[in-house]
Image: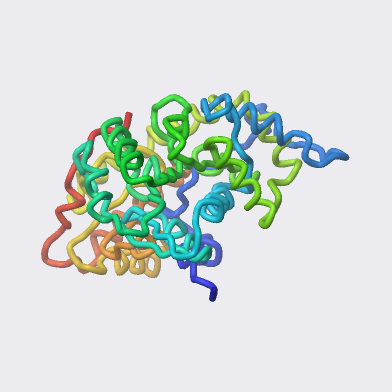
Length: 375
């Protein structure tokens, strides 16, 4: 199959860091581990990967994963690729949420699957997600892809939706992949929906919520057969994360709750600052942020993309354009930088919003709905 372009990833890698101000990086600001008195180095041991089995077990225990185990991968990106490789055959169909993370739509196609979107709108009432998915099902639909907290909106999967998805999967013989990379940005205790039933498989990492992206530690959680199929797929990719990364992640495991508390403290300040801005500019009103990302939509069909380009060109502010998430009328705003840096970027956003030539209607109705707050 010919190469498929990852426009969002390519932009983030090549261009995002050139902007002096940013509301585009979805990870929490990287911690200074040494300054926090936390482990910040790991040796290259002779056997290379000795920490990996223990880290898989202890992370599995932390999450309550099936069998008390996860399968480590080099970040959530590789974990997702392993799941797609393990679960999909040529001709299978995947349904992925819109707006949603671009690789969830692109990577399944590398394994011969077709991908269609289903709407996961802002402010949808709990319990309505499964009917929206069922109405989009086709005869070859095999896998449903979701995220929790959702990227880009920050919406959580509610208990009513999880129960309805369980019933739908059992009734229609579907598999459910939930990318939980952003889950711990919310207030729920560490867990994984992979523990609910064998039709669930989940992926996550230490990158976004914990600010440990340079470790490239991600994982797959699922039943034993799914983990084994994913491990077989991993053999064709990297065969696992680097030994020093696994060793340092294992040393940091007892401190993850402290790092998560740091994340929540940063987000509390930045959420409050964004809320004050949204009160001053109704175009950015709508759901209160629940994690490191939030989403806003505007009236024009491509207004989000145009505003992101304008903010970058005129104010040096990086914003991820909506077309990266399948909806050009929107933008994703990230809230994980250090509060002083976030305040400077937010000031640039406000100035850009004041000067941008908006459409006559100031906001798209979808941006004004308020979902149940993430628990």
